[in-house]
Structure formats: structure tokens, C-alpha cells
Length: 282
Image (cartoon, rainbow, N blue to C red; front, side, top):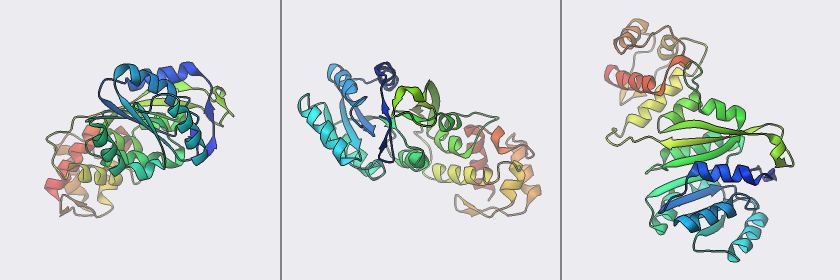
């Protein structure tokens, strides 16, 4: 860890690995998935922590050579705690995750690892579609992406909005590029995402929320009103009236949203209220 597009940037600082382990907070009964295990820079100390605390790990590594090498190390340690799988994270979620967690007899899933830039959006979307949600995720991301993911108003963006529907992201600490071999071009950061309790939410809430987020951030420099009035979309089975600025503005004011504000000023709760109002109004 980390590892990008089968090109390796290996973490050289053991103190950082320990800080990541503290962030994922392994506990008895946890089932932890590590993405991009590499040489085991995080995998092996995490396995030792899980051996002491009674949890299990599956480590995913796409590079077959690295996966086989790490498997040899595991066979010399404790296979009851850690299993290495050669495979792609995108193909593991959500079905592989549910199956592996069920096999381990665990209801509490956690995910940790490095997320290459080109996978970030797709992987976070897959995790967001997984039920039950992982209790906690701890990811190493490019620092710029980490900052975007954890953004709050007035710097909200679509990536942050989509993740913040199901989780509460927080940048835990930065990791300078000098701590990797070979050093990457940019600094990284560790982000922790704590899952939100969405019990009681209606089945269509997620679809409506993400549709609203797509509309609101379709042109971030435009106002909330202009973005909602421009396209035609379906929310909760209804079709809102494209171009009906007066009606949309009235609807927004009714839920305490300024129609002339920019979408980056919206919180995830605001977006949820807009989605619910559009569903009723549409």
C-alpha cells in the first residue's frame, strides 16, 4: 500500500501504517477488506492487530505476482486471521463482499486501502450501493481528492454529495509523497468515512437523492434554480416541469433553500430535502 494501476508506490513509513490501523480501529468480530495489499506493508501489521483483537481480513491484490508473494508470507503467519485474494476491487463489490462477510460470520464490515484516482468514483459508488453498508472505511487518496470528498458548504461538490448521502467523511492526516518508494507525483491523505444510520429510509430515497445531486451539480457555476429548471428528470416516478422556474423557486423557498444560491452552498441534508420536495412536487 499504496499501489496504482499496477505501478507500485510502496509505503516506507511504519508509523503511518500504525496510524492507519488506529483509524480503522479493528475490534472483535470485524471483517476487514483491504484494497491493494501490495507487499503487505499494511496487511501484516493489521493482521497482527486482528489476531490480538479477534477479527478477520481479506486482502485484495490485483497483481498476481504480488498476491502470490504475500500469500507465502501469510502461510508463514496465521491464515485463520488473513486471506489473500488475487482480484480487482471493482469485481469484489458488492456481491463478493457480502459473501465473504457471511462466510466469516460477521455483520460488521470495514474497508481499508489505497484507492487509485481512476477508481475512486466508481468504487465509492459501489460501496454506497452495498447493503449493509461498511461500518467504517479508511482510504488513502490523492490529497486533492481527499479534500474534495470531505468538503462541506461552501465547497460542496458532486463527489462529496454522493458519498455524504451514506457516510460522513473526514480527512484524518496527510501523507507526504516522500514516504513512498518510488515517490509519486502528489501528496496523499487518509480519509475515514463513518457510515450513517439510514434505517427507516424509503427504498427510493437513494435514487432520488443521487438524481437531485446530479441535476444540482450539472453546472456548478449556475444557480440551484437554473440547474433544476434546465433538464427534465424523473424523481420518485414523477416528472418535474422543465423550465417552470416560478414553480421550482416557490418549492425551494418553501423548504428554506435560496433558489439563487450556488450548489456548492448546499449540505447533504439540503440535497435530501430538495430530492424529497421534488418527488412530492413532480
